[in-house]
Length: 369
Ligand code: IPM
Ligand code: MG
Image (tube, rainbow, N blue to C red; front, side):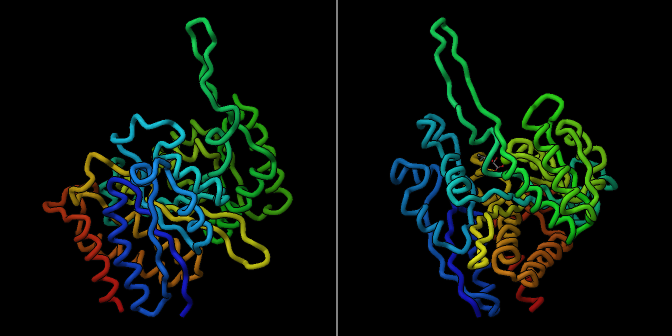
């Protein structure tokens, strides 16, 4: 049985609560003889700021870099609304993504049959939905320079962000999308706004050329990002893999989450380049939802996105696809049995707490053997 090093960074708000449920599943993974873990724990976001005035310390960054995978909760909250910009909680998450080179963010949106009625859309629109959003994660307007507010000296200020993409960044994320599509339904929809943005023109050109050169067997479509947002709520089942930039991917994945019933259902994997020598890649797994300060500490949070993110770690970092399938099946079974946290309540008479949901998934795993 192989041993892997994990760094747990629960962060803030419900990040803490949902991480406790992942610990149960990690424990099961070890007891079931699937893999063993050496787990370290660190601080990120507001929790790190409170402890040492930074959104993540250099020593926790070093642990992240040395780990086989980072398991991340969520960051932020009103408590830190007025801290300096460069140490705000989100800066910790962005530093992890950037410094670890995690350019490929995989955000699967799957509508479990039992949850089709929890979506704000009609059952027939979302039932059976299975799409994969591939979001570029280390470039674009999130990191482009200049990024500043300048004083124009006439009582006016100017806020500047820079959207910038180089050919290699578009190519490598395109490659991830096409390769995933080959293992799924063989279709990629690439999205940008080439009608108003030069970076969109280049994005479109590079994806088109890559397709022609290396992936002509995959169906490729292009949709402008605004139109794609509309299509996601009109007819989401037309999509298989969607590939898009950092900002559009951020927005579109929040939209997609509601197709699955709740933001509390969406896991994600953030992957770096594979090292040709070791075959390893840096990776981080986090739910798409945030720290939800309004419900933090009340046991109301849905731990499914976090647990499903751990399943993605097993699949994408450790080659344990079977174990990931078992965890996903246990989630589906628990939902089929009618167990619901508040966010996916639908018509359910009763709801269960964060830890009860974690326990139910664990019990289902143990029962399934
Ligand atoms: C996400 C989040 C982050 C982002 C925030 C917390 C910085 O919304 O992972 O989708 O914008 O990328
Ligand atoms: Mg987001």
